[in-house]
Length: 380
Image 1 (cartoon, rainbow, N blue to C red):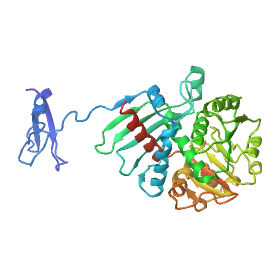
Image 2: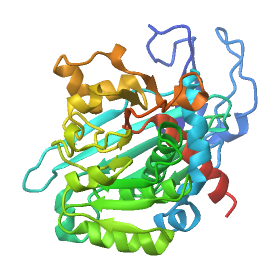
Image 3: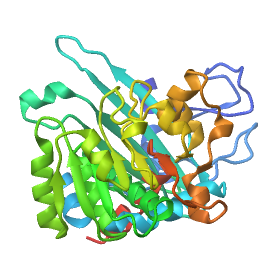
Image 4: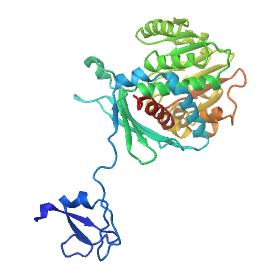
């Protein structure tokens, strides 16, 4: 045989050896023999045993396209699993690394845009998830495509093999964000808080409304940019069978609302302390998920209970970040993480107070919706 027909197998623990035909720690095997020796024990002077590694030992991951995902998953599917994930997170039963953020600067041929990579594993669940999501590619509008996309990779926690690739285009991300909003509504507002406002009327607002409807009936109030509130109200009223009203200003919305969802993409605050009702308001903010965004003024954050989804994350990319940088708050001013309230270790609403819930989106949520998606779609 010539050299092209051989595979050199380096044997540890001899890291400083060089590959050579005379080296006693090197075995040359014909490449054509690999499949036949996969399960055989090979012996040499410096080897006790070695089992040749199979070239392919696991089935390929299944691919689920956007239409299949959208047809089979709803925000109601996500609420229970995401609520359980928050409780597990508070109990230290979730491994959630800090998100990775990639900024795509604008040039003639690229951007502007952002990419987030998140993931997590909830103890004792059959899978873990890694997610890549892109947002704010605003030039896409001129091409007739959405400004963001995304892929979930759901992996077996038994053997580490990828099970499913979900081309979700942010649909699953929006579902788990909506589920987190519903959980915040359930645990941080009063049952008689039945007027809910939405500042920002895009895809996330729609999922927040759907998820809120799973918690309690409500009257909706909406304020959006570029006339989006009218379409939002019409669509949500028809879909949910609940009344929705568009208003002209965010101040009008705040004066009417017991609960306010904010989900805007910008870096400017969207409400003021003096606009809020005096009878206790819950603000659920989900627009800030990177260091350039900010929706809630610092004086609002300081006026009552500040609740984070994950403090180590909100301090870097959430509403808390701005207050920390200004020296107006410290992490000691965080009343609770949402999971602590869900788990019952701290109370939620206790009276006519302002509560701000800062939702930056955690890997625990991604792990939860990834498990739900695999459980449902793998049976198709």
